[in-house]
Length: 287
Image (cartoon, rainbow, N blue to C red):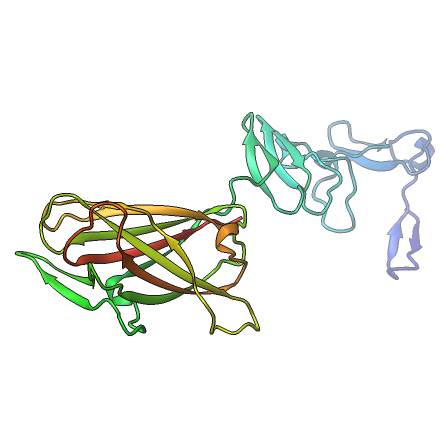
């Protein structure tokens, strides 16, 4: 059989005459770019315009180009992709593409398949909690820290007098994503030093929001709780709360907020004796 020199590899290539006159059983004529393959069943050389992988054997090199490989054969049945595309099973043995959503969207389900949707519900509130020992005693009249010993347990409490206004100090930072259209909630956990019938107390929350480059030394703004009823049973803790809007408080993102808590006389019947405060919290809304 004739051979010819391959100018690229430098090797001799076997030249096969596919015509019957060439002595090899094969098609009598050939078309451009046809592929010859040996058919072991018939013992002849055949020509195909499309060669199946099963016909041609293992592809060990070169570039393979073809139509999208179907899912049942381990493919995706996709031919193009864009940045951010997500593949998902849209039905049994079927893959689909989900195009990228908009910045800030969340991935959710609709009719059992993934989809993009605008985020809702905000980030949730942030709460700052202070136990009795967390407070600072910075004022001339400050509420002392007392240890109250029960029969089996012990607790620390700030003791607020019923006639002299006493204070505790602390500070917080406004969240960077504070919801300026939302509402702040103040919560206090407290009880009467001695058992009495239900009486009222009133607390004042003083605050000063300090922005970057602003002096901390300035006047406080006061927010009163209004009358809060105390449980009259010995050692029973009362949880009470009141609210104020962020806009009325005047707080802004990342403000340093100086805080002060005190007890003042209520409009109703005043609780006689000390008021024990064991915890205080500020819940701030986030956008």
